[in-house]
Image (cartoon, rainbow, N blue to C red; front, side, top):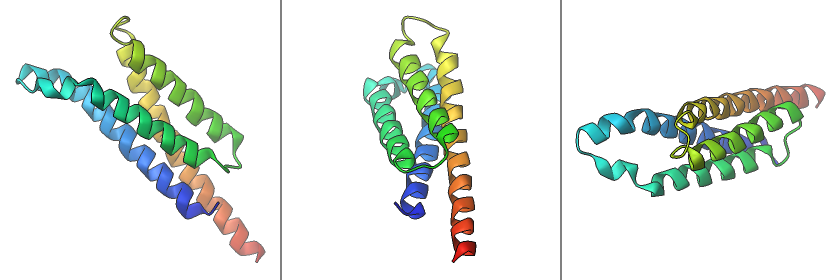
Length: 124
């Protein structure tokens, strides 16, 4: 798989996780101002699907097992936190943490892919 496809998946993952993080932080304020539509569960599932697909694509042929592990553990933590945050209030905070870890994982993967590309160019 070429690095362009991996980078696109990482960029989508970073964007999705960032939007999700802003959504989660801003939701209480938006509710206070009467924008209750933002609490629709559709958004929660949309972010989960986009996160899964972007992590799957980004880690499909990744050479760094540590980055792959970081992304997948972060995703499963994010999934668990998102699905059960209504029952356990503290999961709201762990959801923020896992969203940030997903962003960090995608950024690390982009850097890793760039380094691999430079090494491949130097070998040729």
